[in-house]
Length: 182
Image (cartoon, rainbow, N blue to C red):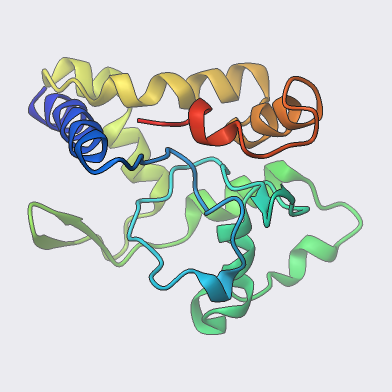
């Protein structure tokens, strides 16, 4: 419960501070209008499971997650290409299985590194599944609602934004600033 309250309180505090300063903060994964060279610092925002950075320089960038795409040229020891994705029989399910079964090194919690050597992400997810969170009395399950909605509908936050861009926003990215304002 404490983590959920903390995040909600933090969002309220960020919004109030921004209003005092005449600025706003967006819940989007990438600055939707600026070129990368114009961004002095890439903020350390935790990337959620699903893509949410479909715009660059005022237009769709061709990716549901530009941040994810940037990793393809970041550290090939940790983010290189996976040869099996080019197999004729390759499908999304194979990638999910691969990602879930990659051995982990650690989890960072409460400013401490917790050794997860030998544990796969699949095992970690099973341990942290929302029913487990509820059983232990944690209220982080609220953060899983959007994840559940994406899994249920097959529509990511980025796809919702692109739909708004093509329809209601009439191919103008500026409304994203009001749509995702904290």
